[in-house]
Image (cartoon, rainbow, N blue to C red; front, top):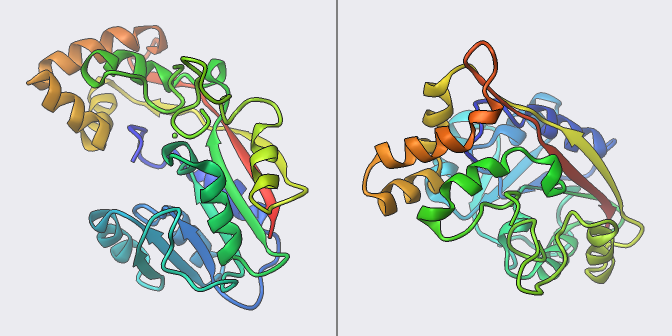
Length: 257
């Protein structure tokens, strides 16, 4: 879970579902389904849905939000899904968190029926993701930036350091990885999703509810230290009304199995 405001992902989820086109002959598989927000929108569009996530707690939340969905525990690159069984595959904001993106993409291709869409999203370029301010503010507690934070690239985060792989958001990078994984002729689109927080309380509530926020508090020893660092780090994004607005770009990879 990212420390974003409630409902931040709706525009991104809608773009992902639009990219699927017309689906027939089976369920949509949402890998890394989290609390089920995309699954809910998909069911509301009349789709059959199956969700997979590694976290039993968020799957329990998804079961409440989308009782129509089949929900399974699992994670990339080894999904509990038969070969060629999905009528489409979505994977939103997961690829940045896996050690081997090619292996993860290859697994998405395995579970998709031939010719069906596979849609994956990652953070856009660092300079287009104000969300990175969270990572810079929390780095003293966590020892490094958050994905998309300017250090969710070739496996962990969207920045390059110590001669590591190029960021996933680098020009042509996602398309190349998809080709290596057996997903040729992929294209990448961009979508802007601002994170809007009405006030300081909302900003911090989202952070404390996220795993990264809980880790930061545990390392810092108190919420007060985390609060001070975050408010200082995000001061430039404060609006005249006292809220916060962080503009972000996401990349949407659209391929076919």
